Image (cartoon, rainbow, N blue to C red; front, side):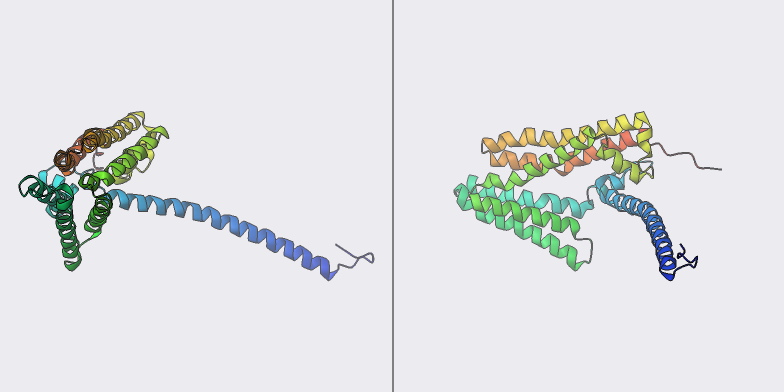
Length: 275
């Protein structure tokens, strides 16, 4: 702009420069935001892929042939199985022996049974830490054992040692069911990132249907645990509840992994290598 005499004023020059700088800054900000969005998506995909790798299915999904060693690795190996089963088994054995053969009352037998179970879980966790292995599974198991024991001690009822598992199974079932209702079946997401498909599988109707079927099958798995175990809790049959908890834990989980793997191999068949 110019003054009435026709000369340009310094104020106007600075204003125009400031406007240009602001526009340039906005453009740079927009470009940075556009660049950051793909980076965030890539980071999310990477994190989700790593989480999927750590799942039980991660040890199976990309294998062309299934072996007993693969299944064993998928459920945590020998150590993982022992960490998952033995604390519960020890609780059940100690409690049953004290109440059925030693003549102790239910509340009197509860404390030593819980001490034995928690003590074994602590030993497993310490062994993981000392061996400098991956203590995540052992720590998670220890936290679960401690919370269950605290709940049973608080109520004075041995069957409450299993209540936490009811909420865990219900939570998993609900989360998986919601994923189906919003048309993003969780098993499809896990498998997609494991085999390198990402979310491309959603463009194929057959894969979408199979992903929904598998996710609903896992919903049924968690619901079945509740259907079998909750009635045993309600009738206060601690021994039967503990036994079914063990049988429907790692063994049934392993069968579900194998079943899922078989369906995945049929739907996500590996592509022939390029010549």
